[in-house]
Length: 360
Image (cartoon, rainbow, N blue to C red; front, side, top):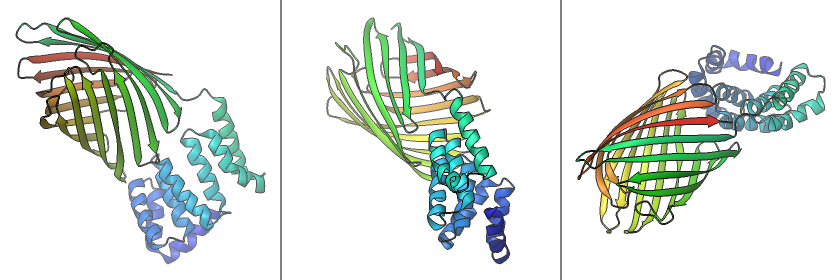
């Protein structure tokens, strides 16, 4: 194999390369990524370094970043067989068998009897023949709140449906029916979200409630985020959301920058809420939301907020603590139970909600 031959010479001449290669072979992927990333800066014309960096990234499912490394490898060494196979495998593992077939085609054209290439072609064909990955997602949720001071209860029921039209683009919509203080509103929203490479994503949503009593007559949301760091199991992401809503009582605008820090199965998101309320006044606050994947199927969530809220047209300060649990019954069914306690100026509110997600 080309990789075996190419690796031997740098190992003998460069202990740093040998140590990085050994880390990858031993499953120490985070160390291997860091080492080969450094070597790629020191030896940017070495195709073996870029190949091993791509293989290390692929091992942790960072396929877009792996592809960039493989593309550099092939630009430096267009006939590098192992790089061509790895480039095709990356697409296959990312759920894009048609792209994998196209990436493998140049190798098969030049070496139709290559046993590894032929085996990969068969694997691609078998994947294409299998039922596809879920592209649709259906969410159903119901929540009920009890208010203090004998103010009764609130309720909400939500139906959301979305479809992944390609690996990077999702389109969807939702309908939410709420009842508060004996008055009901139905709010509908359409959303489009897209990933722009492995680091950047964005979304835009437009919604409104016809004949609204307390929900927005019209609302526009937009935002995006960028990955600042992905190193092993550590991730840092910076984002910004913006919301404009027109209520019967006036317009509300909000800017919400946020930062997500993740390490292994745990993550924490800190969000700043900056609102211009319906009277033209400025209000601000923050939210904290943490998640821990206790097992492969079980996720626990905890949140705290001390921020203005404009959900019913009147912007008021709200202090809240929330918690929830999500459990994947199967790869396609998820159940969530959430609860929250809010302190408002006029009353307190306790809410319990249940949600079911179906992927198909």
